Image (cartoon, rainbow, N blue to C red; front, side, top):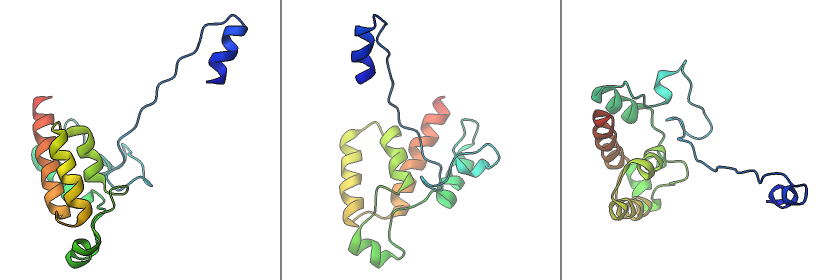
Length: 128
């Protein structure tokens, strides 16, 4: 913001900046997507079976260690990769809010969220 103000005084064009968010790696925010690890991301060339396998096997969950713990405490959406992907790919905002509420309360399990993401990604990549 300061740069934009100073540029006017120095008779330069105002610079522009873009803010964007990136998809986290399937293993979570502390790891990165890498071409040397094909299981760290969903690729546009992945088949429906590969998408299902990668999400079920590698996508980091924010749910509890056990079903009982998850039902009691709910999910941590800050670390839950399937939910973060749903924020990009689920077009129905009301459905996303419903999933968010139920998942954080423990009414919805990780497997259900992963299945919803699998369906969304398979449809999206098939269209692509």
